[in-house]
Image (cartoon, rainbow over all chains, first blue to last red):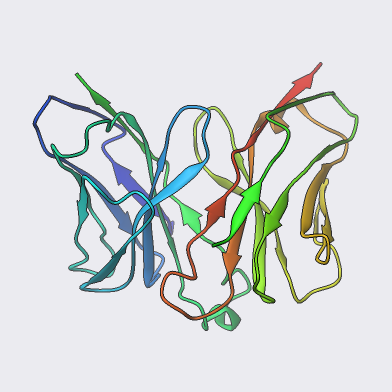
Length: 120
Length: 118
């Protein structure tokens, strides 16, 4: 089945440690996103990418890094510079604007199941 | 920048009754998309319904329908015949239709927690 796979589901980080969250999609989407969700809050955009080898900062990019070496993959690294990383992280993907006519759901962003990150 | 506001942090409804969740947004753009996402306790984000701004007809998906008022920048979600499985956080979201850098990102409201009383 087509979809977005995030791993691991739960991750614990020690102080000063970098950790990487994986996101893989087989929907043939060009655009991919990382969102952060804090308890009782909405989603805030960390980074997004419209094409391989290119990505842009979102609203809360400080302390995070990403790469987009393959169309299917968009890993997120939470660095030691992120002082409050405990949160729920959601990866998402979509086709890029201008291609919505290709499929009926073209304007929709699809989400993975998320990853919980806790600092210990 | 676009903003989305959900003024009801929590709502509750009796099973089988109808409930309406409110959402307003602010934008200077003329073409965009609006969405309602459902987030159950599993935290999975599930698309409930979407509306294209250029369409005057309100979107409907089974028991879910919207009241889209473009001039008022309002986008409410009506859930008819509420079921226990509808209990979740509901997020209203905005997405630009323009092909410019960053336009395709979703802007979310703060969410409304919906409780269904049996």
